[in-house]
Amino acid sequence: MSEGLRNTLGALDPVAVGRAVRLLAAADVVLVLGNGQSAPLAAASAALFLQAGRRSEAPADAFVQKLTAGRLLRPNVVLAVSCSGQNPSTLEAVEAARATGTASVVGLSCRAESALIESSDIGIVVPGGEPVSVLATLVSLQIASFSLTTESFGG
Image 1 (cartoon, rainbow, N blue to C red):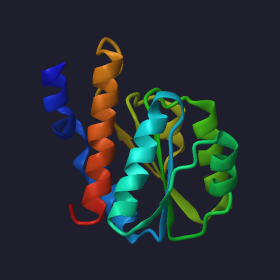
Image 2: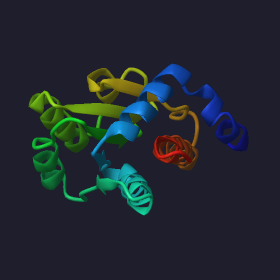
Image 3: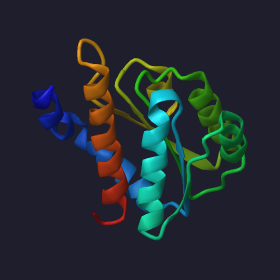
């Protein structure tokens, strides 16, 4: 597990990460989505943005996520986090954001072939999933999310 964690940042696509960081840095508001096991990660990521003086939201309720996502305007960004990339509530909110035609979506998932990665403007695959433990997967996802978050406001 510790080796997998050490390799998390090195395994991320540097081009996709760079594009995501620039997009997040230019956003007026970042809507962070996460449900199930990813919900605390979404809340913590939004808190990091707020601590840096950036506008950010991470509604806990799936309906509020979808409602908020459907009303985003450019240059706003959705940062969607899902270990499986298949969480229905997260995907519905991402679809609502995409339907506006004005918000960009950065998706973080541990599965390259997931609906979240496919529906994101920038999809970032984080190492994890089987046979790695759930804890290791969540920590890898957390490292990636927090790295994107802090890099977007200059570390």
